[in-house]
Length: 281
Image (tube, rainbow, N blue to C red; front, side):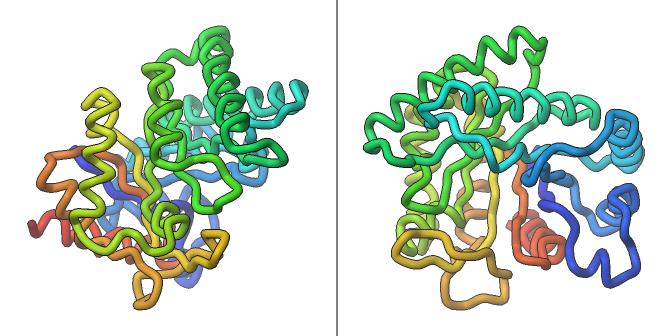
């Protein structure tokens, strides 16, 4: 079943006087939000006891928890010591999602750096392939590693590159950030045909269950010549992309992803807007 969620807490959550993530469980449930994505983007600093308590609270209210791994991960770094750190960030994120009672970790795959694109992609693939053994050694056989399409030209993570790394292991799932794709490609997503092209490409090269159960990030994003600049809200009428054609494509293809809204401060409201639209189709 398709599920709709939020990346972190909205402005409205804090405006209503809430402060603790523990309070977000009932807050999300009361608004019909199915998933809460907890970000460790700036580092993992949550102890096990608190993570388990948060997980229990969300389970009590029937809201799933997913994790976004630290932004520092770069599997195209030529320094072996830095690759070990990237392994550690992923493994620690897996530990937290297990503490939460969840099974999805979103990962930014790599930055091109000073390497040419071809060499950077080859190095990224080599290191993400090696991640399989790290996950096995730690016993994380059932955690989905959701590798994300990226929004800046200097980052690795085009649709084709994500399809490539997701082919390396059963646990590697695509995290398709349509706002990132639109920003990177200078406004390419204009209608349902554009969205459907991406979905069909994935169906051509990945198992259907990975495409149906993919992770999706969605928001409108301002972009410039180098790609992504900043996240916007659904109120923006300049940059896009629009959510309606995506909802139509997901509905028509009977896909069942997690759809996580990353709007800038209005993610809860915009998530509910998407969900209502989808179930009206």
